[in-house]
Image (cartoon, rainbow, N blue to C red; front, side):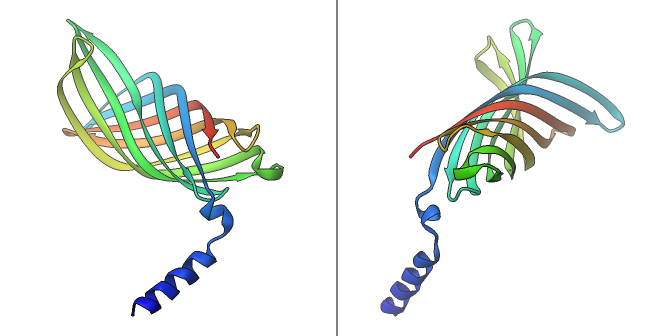
Length: 183
């Protein structure tokens, strides 16, 4: 039985390409703009603010990887030392296709996963007084330019949803990003 499992594992590993075994970890920083639409029953409102996220992940091949991110999608000062924030924490899969030689040049891509969006009330800019969260899928598309196999720039559009305490949130984010890949 052990020999059969070892043989099956060896066959499975040999089926992987060398690109899949020799992938690239990456980090990404994004900054841009969020449009936040809120609705409670038939009442609707919208706000916009600066969005900043950082993330990272691993490209298993030149076209497929996994990612994680954390950041702020919205922040508003309420007065009397109180702020309200929408914070995102997520993980998902990413895919992209480069049009240049050696995985450089222009590219297009997509990403999808699960994001935990947290609405938090802070006092004195740091102390979290109250927070509520919602976990829902997120999706996104990207287009950009890889200057080398190690770094590139992109323009990204992401869509997140949340249902927090009976309030529905639709969050559309457009960001400019820089990505650095290692190895």
